[in-house]
Length: 113
Length: 116
Image (tube, rainbow over all chains, first blue to last red; front, side, top):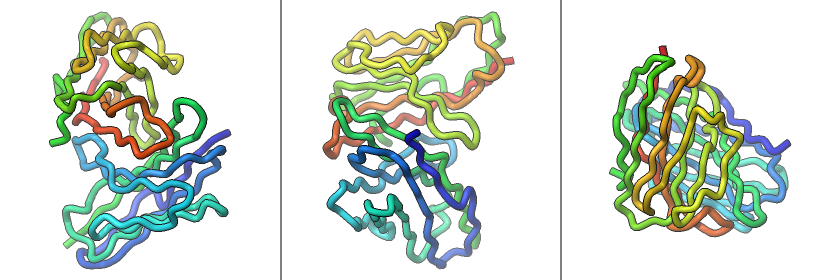
């Protein structure tokens, strides 16, 4: 069964610190992997999209990595800010025809001053 | 803002009520989606419309009825809902139905629904 597992479920860090969120998947055949940020009371917003051949992609202070061999991805946040407090959702796309998107349950990050 | 709006933002309804959720996108996209987001659970895809035609219905109960009158508007008609249907309902759009390329979905802010 195609699944996307994210860890930790929740995380609290102090402002200015770095953190790394994990995403493990069993989706096959794999097409691409996306990270979304969802602020409270808002819809998800795309941060990065990576295909099979890409192993790192950055968007400002956010850096996503992908290891297609071990089927793992991480999202690294550098020098965290209070505005980084949100849920971060990993989404893996299954290839073939119209791609099916498999969503993780998300990691809820709280950045404290 | 993402260019996708949803109304109402909050809705409380009884199990015998009939209500509709509205989604409008101002991005010129051709594909629109309804998702259900329950607490601590992954987003669940409900319906997909591509060029106004429904292309996917993920075994959604018939008490949820979608309508797509044109590429910019999407509705979700609700009737005789159950308390377990309480959730955040998200609408999204993309240029075309998600493929293996770099298509990005743009999400609306959602409608927080509470069924009593």
